[in-house]
Length: 128
Ligand code: HEM
Image 1 (cartoon, helix red, strand yellow):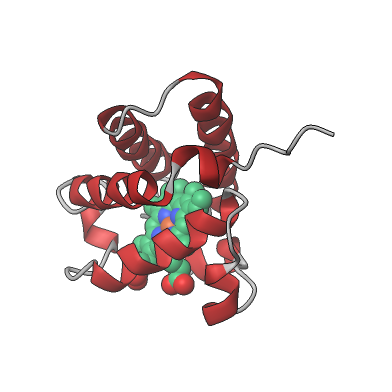
Image 2: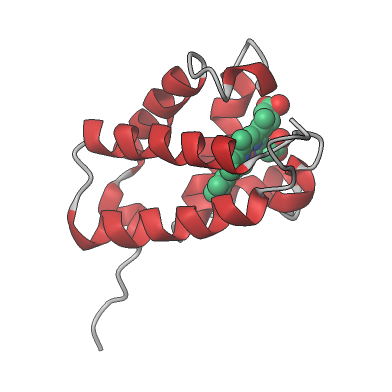
C-alpha cells in the first residue's frame, strides 16, 4: 500500500506559517480587506495557522481549541462580497507564489480555497 500524501506534510509547517504571515501582511494593506479586519492581526494569524493545518490534513489544532470550524457562520459578522472574496484569493495566491508553492499541490489547494471563499460570500456589493 502506498502511503497517502498529506498536503500539510508536503508543504511543511514552516512554509505554511510563512505563507500565512505573508498573506496577512497583504490583507492588512488591501483596500477591500483591511476595513473588515482587526488592526492587530496576531490572533487572526494564529487561528488561521491552526485552521490551515487541519484543512490540509494535519493535526486538528483549530477544532481542539475553538470547536467545530463552522466557517460560514463565523464569517457572518463580516460583510463578505464577491470583490472581497476575490481580493482574499489574490492575497493568498501571491503569498503562495512568494513561498514557491507550485505544481499540482498548489493547484489542488488553491482550487479548494476558491470553493471555500465563494461559500463564504454573504453580502452583495450594495450591502457592503
Ligand atoms: C476569520 C474575512 C475567507 C478562514 C476572518 C475574519 C475576517 C475574515 C474579517 C475575522 C478576523 C478576526 O477578527 O480575527 C474573510 C474574507 C474572506 C475569508 C473577506 C473571503 C472570502 C476565508 C477562507 C478561509 C477563512 C476561504 C478558510 C479556508 C478564517 C479563519 C478565521 C477567519 C480560520 C478565524 C476564525 C476564528 O475567529 O476562530 N476571516 N475570510 N477565511 N477566517 Fe476568513
